[in-house]
Length: 375
Image: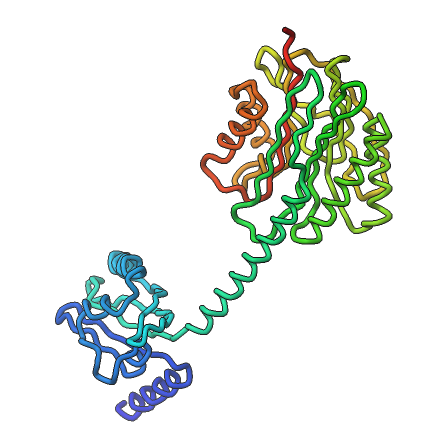
């Protein structure tokens, strides 16, 4: 038995040395914490330099990490189980090391905790590598977001008889930027062209597709009055120059004189109309396929009244992981019913309501137009 135990100890020592792991044991009854030489070296201490008390362990932790490490140990003691810690320690020369610990709670025959034991490894290089990757991704995100913002409209075009506002909100959780876009076009005869779309995918490729779709649509809309023809020709352009692209979109013409909203839809979220009496209507007639596939697009015309508000949006406004998109659209309709009449104020209201308890995981584009009420 003694020989077997000695052999097991030797194998354990070899494994710890090969993995460059340090070890500790904390005895709650005596208050003594024992570190081996490698764990001391990780924290910049000479052999035997660790004080041996629980408080000495807290003292070597980075000040910003102490509370979380202590809380994690306390949770493990309350429900004895294995646990993991990640903390930093500042050496005498001012350098910082990152250390990952994996421990377990020791218990007596009654199941009550009597201490902890575990191993630790220096993960400084890994942490630096992770930080470098995070910095690079953040830099790329800022560059792409700057590019996308530069490609989206800054001037607010107005035509007599309408008020219009728009917003673009980048994802708060995704490093890669999306391809959400919108366009507001003053047309002849005091009509207002409105478009919104969402490119499948993220990153520079999506931004390039977004720019191509938006600029092409603007050029087509200035010479073609029919929304369904504009989408059909835009689809032809994308299938030639961006054969791998897939884009959902709505394009329509708001005519405050004729009191009509004429539009075509390519696989996009249905627009919301808010009537003068505050009720809402979802323009959810069956839509045609997204841009990027062979398809024809149908024209639809909606009669409106002075004071009617039109809300166009991308799916980032209504999608959540824990609910269907139908539920999200219903929440949007309710928010529209309770929102202010001014399009600018309504944009802010909808973003506040739809995102008040969550972070948007996808980009959001939002366009709101209103036919001015009769004087």
